[in-house]
Length: 141
Image 1 (cartoon, rainbow, N blue to C red):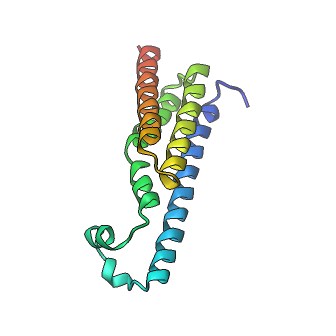
Image 2: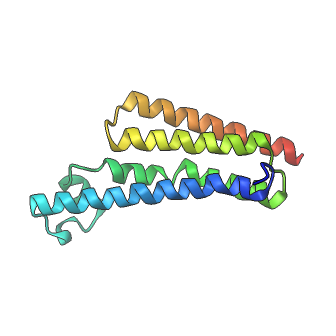
């Protein structure tokens, strides 16, 4: 695949979506497992407030919500780069770096949940995303 083809910019986006689906699956495995172990009736956790008050294994659910925050700007960036036709090696490599950082963030949050480590990867990925948006703007102008 040509490093400057539109597909080169779309593949990190596909990988990010894949990460989201993996975390989604983990959330349901944990949630259903905890509900079975503790004999929690599904209706007793019908609202997010009831879930927060009842379930103890919420890391994957918390991470899934995180994957619909800053990554939304990532998806928009990827689509904007492709639609304007300004794909570059810097943007493609930066997009892959963002995906890796978000995967590390998910791994931390869904396992050890070390806040300091999670925060550092979050900040790094967010700053990288801001740089990528600036680079896109420069290429467009």
